[in-house]
Image 1: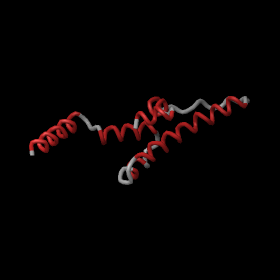
Image 2: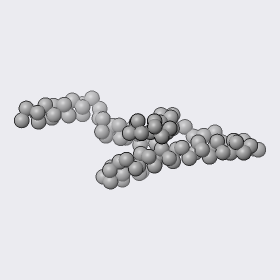
Image 3: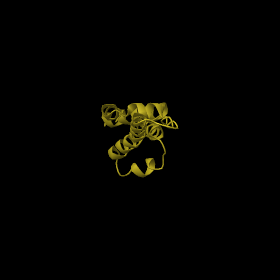
Image 4: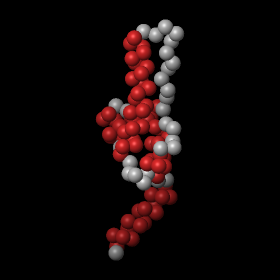
Length: 98
């Protein structure tokens, strides 16, 4: 998933999790265009994450607000913490021995 986000150019949105600067009082056309592109990146990154998860996972991440929250949830859920990883290794060893 990280590679997909990097290939689409959205990884910086996930990593930084920042909102674009508000437009100045009298913005130029380039500033307006850049602002809209930066805002659109957030939504495109969320759409990218939504599109690759299964139907079982989707309801759990739809309630999260930012791409960083979604990414952290998926990372914790599927990568796990140290204890979860150790349990997975033990289970895999047990299956291998069988």
